[in-house]
Length: 127
Image 1 (tube, rainbow, N blue to C red):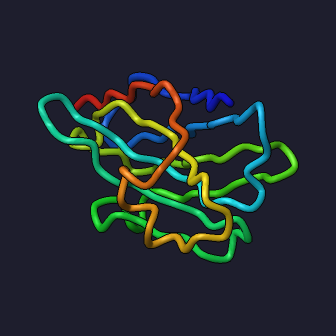
Image 2: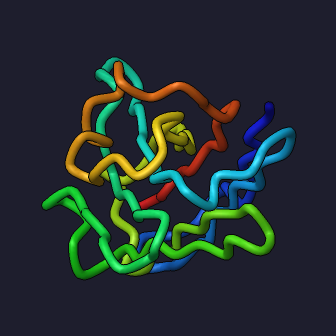
């Protein structure tokens, strides 16, 4: 099973990026998926998650109103649209998937419960 993240890069403050995470090796259509990030010298933190049904989405307070998570179950892919980027958004962004089917999205904030991780894509926001 692989989660392949892409879409990171260098952008100026106020700009936008769209991250993608394509899963292969199994389907995650019954599983919550989402994103974490880790800034230099800091611990990994939750960013956003989306349930298998797409109806439930959770966001960290720091990104609410600026980031939007979505998914395409037919493509086994999750996306993160990031708008109004700030220098403090600079980090390596990791996609992840919960291996337990139909588990609520609130559990996704605990990274230790997650079974599958992508390799990370770097986002740098310049001021």
